[in-house]
Image (cartoon, rainbow, N blue to C red):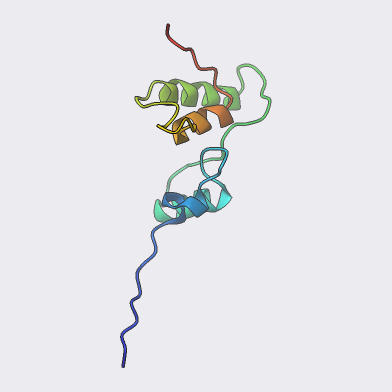
Length: 99
């Protein structure tokens, strides 16, 4: 009998199907991450309009400060935006360009 080559799939949040084309993770990716990391408090991106000083506004400010300070290009060699750039755009972060 021929053996079936069964490879274990990796979590969806690490593959293309768990990532949103507009940046960050989609619902399937977030669900997969929570399943792989029990007890985590991963939430959806803050993409809408928020009141100044609200909990969501503070989450956005914190994310933008952390992600905006990460090393790495905003565009790849072909001129396409990187995952970092897409995530910052999705969260509506204002990126200060140094001159």
